[in-house]
Length: 108
Length: 121
Image 1 (tube, rainbow over the protein chains, first blue to last red):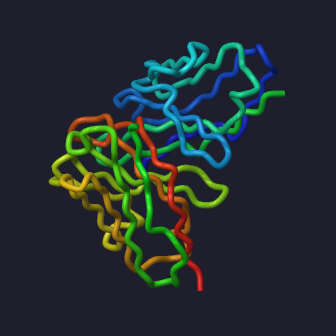
Image 2: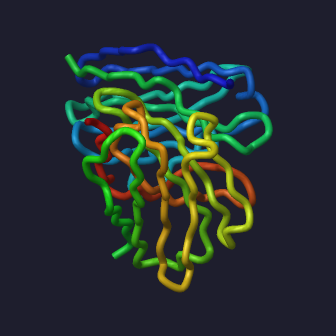
């Protein structure tokens, strides 16, 4: 079955830039999406279609794509950004959604 | 207010059944495709099932095929998940999520708060 691979953890100090990667063979053909999830809460969409930001999401959140890897970048990390982040895409047929394993962002 | 509210979770024995519901409000439910996504305790997100806006197209993840059935009632603004032959590994918080795609599984811009399903004897 199709898989998306993320690093288990990433850390950054306040004001620094945090980058979270997600790799998958179908990513050149399928869009990637990113969700933020804080403890005890439902996920929140922060990036859609590789690099688009929903209304209400701070500009410090951005997304990019290169080949089989997509990247979520948080510029000027804030304490409130500490959360789990999940990438999501679809398999090549578009009939199954797939999530990455999640990355825990720690703000030092 | 635009929201999704799940209900129907609880404790069930292995082999048992449960029906989850998701009530939508604040938007035109019949225009959107919908999904169920689950999260086992301490684990990551797992997509479970998709249903098109009309209900004519349905997809499932392999681990629930033949056991779970997704459905919707657009007149009642509601989404359902009938879960049969439940296993311990089905224990999770189940979220309903609104899909922004057209005619395929896409991405989820609105989530409910989830309902906990525990499968245990």
